[in-house]
Image (cartoon, rainbow, N blue to C red; front, side, top):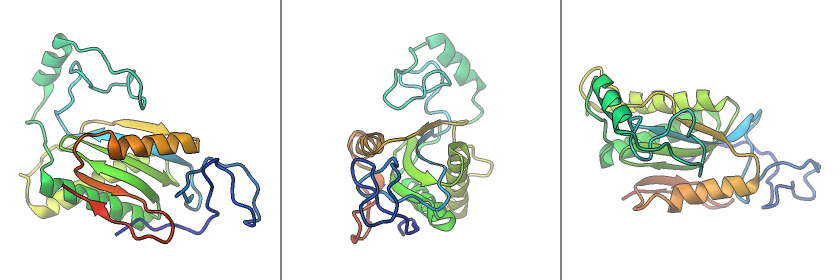
Length: 212
């Protein structure tokens, strides 16, 4: 089910609240975008599966290289070998069934906590989410991981004590409509073949998950 929203004024593509709303404050906005009550920000959250993006690998994210469209860390065979030696379990991969469970869990927590889910894309080894919420991005990301793990535990697909998620992830604030639109476009269209995916619809339309 789509994430629940509250009825605050809809912002236009420039980020201004539409005339007649009784509020002329300039806000970051998106053409399909509604703030949730008490929102602290809109975030582009990414977290990886355990063991799939080790430090030293090409494209890996670390504390110095975790910005949307920012540079990746350089490949380092020494760091990669060291990281592999520290791993306790095999890399965790999300197949089609697991991807659907994770997407459903993200939608569930957004509905329960009344966060506005704008887009989500669950891949084989990482998850992207654009969301507006009333908690810090780190708290939101941890909630996504917890709900997803709970859903996977209930499915019985994994063995006991399975580690599924890499520590932390990327938590980026999106302040303006252009940033929100660009992040959603990258999440939906810039990931290669679509997998388990959700995009918030225009007002008056029904939301649908797109899965392959």
